[in-house]
Image (cartoon, rainbow, N blue to C red; front, top):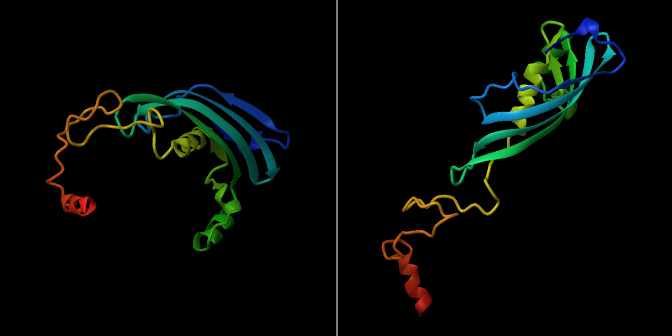
Length: 171
């Protein structure tokens, strides 16, 4: 969805987006469902405030065992969108504060909400996805799914470089 700067007033406008056409299925797992609520208002002649919330469910695989899993995504965000060109050039060589991190500089006075939602969906993906908290994963030796079966590896540990330490514990 495209929002034109000229159409946004000081009065808050609310938008609800309930499809996932803006999210490419090949990235970060398949997004099964998503709803977004956006509140858009004008701060000044060149600045728009966008506040939003994104809720959804994505399908991916467990990082330990490889089983398919559905996981929720949630993101709350705020952007200050501006068309001021001099601000963007000034910030190029200086450290950004937290307030600067929410600034979005545009070349044209058009806001692409699809880009904002896609970015928030990527940021909401956890670093680690597990099918359950106590997932044991797959045994590196025999390849057994440790959540369902016990390891088939032989208990012989004499080949380990640490086997010599076992002699000290027997003394």
